[in-house]
Length: 183
Image (cartoon, rainbow, N blue to C red; front, side):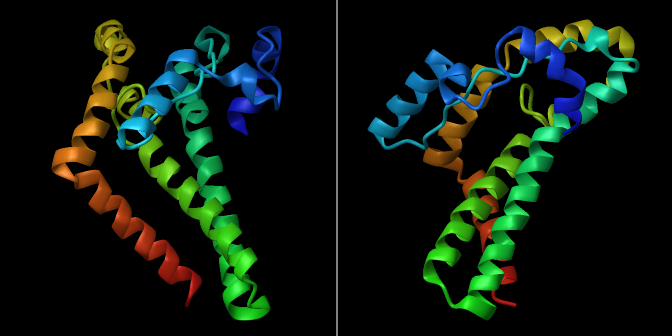
């Protein structure tokens, strides 16, 4: 919501303020997603990043943090809505369809929020670390952040194939979430 309020006019100028998913597709991110799925790897893709012009903010360092955290916050809210649907299905309506919809909505958004909040550039969680980088080191940090996406992709694939750290952590998070629905 904060990002939407702060950047509405900027994105309108770039024709990105739309519900049409085709306007948000990044061709390389889509190809990467389809290729991973075909190879049996974790399906990892991405859309075009939201353009942010920090020079239009009154307090760029603080407000850019708010803009970065807006996406994961929406994912957490949607996960809560999914949890509410599951809770209602289990304790009141006994509807399998409602439970399935709530489970998919909730778990998908929970995993997205957890992934986005990883403090690795260019993910949204890196904005928290960026807040603590001294001003004199920001240009070097921004250069590193601009080149970090391939590193994140390699880490996701390696975790899936070798390390299983993220898989185990996300599995524990998913178990915790599902247990909440049955309480």
